[in-house]
Length: 417
Image 1 (cartoon, rainbow, N blue to C red):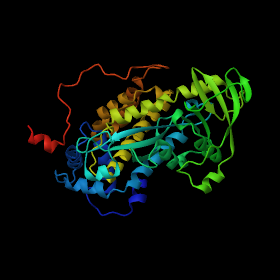
Image 2: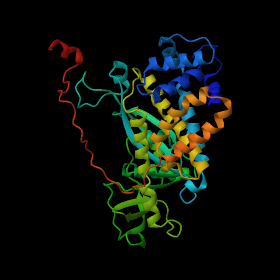
Image 3: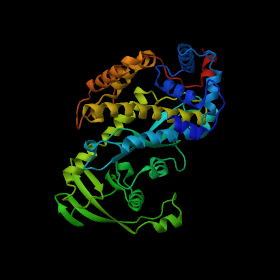
Image 4: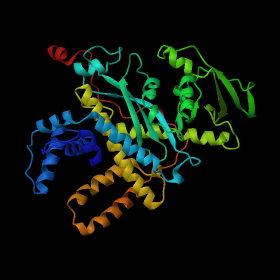
């Protein structure tokens, strides 16, 4: 991590909030309970005192300025490199048929209602000015084996070229030719599949509801299982003529109905990949939904604090970096104890790391090895259940407080109080 900081940030003056200290403090901030700059600075100050060094000022100005100087490229490079390292070094037993599987999905996050944020991340048109919040859309790629984030694209919630397809195209370069991409029906389009084919990447998608499937056509492989050719549709607005001409005129795909879903893939050999193999793989797509839940709820990325678009982008990147670092510890524990990382509780890991953190920093050197072993044992002790096909209603039992919704900008509402 220090090497990445030095290579990206370059030379820096000898100051309290160097890029290394600033990034470490930023990670602590997104992992803390209230995400405040004040608590973060007090943590840095207490650490300096404990190390016998001159303390920094308890004010937040120096830290906030240092965050502003921290290069965004540094943060996202660290995300990609930590995620890729876990992905590439995954144990062979964690893979699907010896293949590394990448999952793709999108989500949204909100942020403070400032003019700068509204300009780059406009709020939904259904919300009145002054009472809504800017919203950003993000698409992430995660490793099925390790759960790490491989890359992320962030953009406005609405506007031209802001959909999940457009964002995914920005990060397709993070996929490698031996990867298998799995995503839901939204991504099942001719041109995305064609781009994956050009890059030599295999895929499994659920069929889009607008595409009709007739199993009486094509080359029959079995019941509700066949190979068909898709014809190239007309050129979409976002694609230039030169790129359109490079796209193939037809695509050969396999359509398989299993578990009530129609899956589209390029695994044409039923001897190598059966319809049940495809069903099992697609069921595992749900893990990216859980990973997003971990990031947004446990790490509290659903509501950001950055008051400028630049800080919003940095804040998202640091959340993903913190997530990858936690996943690294989970992978270490899984390797030591011979289990799969996706069977370990993410929240349990965060709680164990918080409980052991100060002991590693200030504990006696002779007990560090014991502390590490006990931390690994504590992490693997908290497991998650295997609940395939689980469904829950999108509803909450606890009722909200009986306050009316704000329908005017807060400054105007104060006048009418």
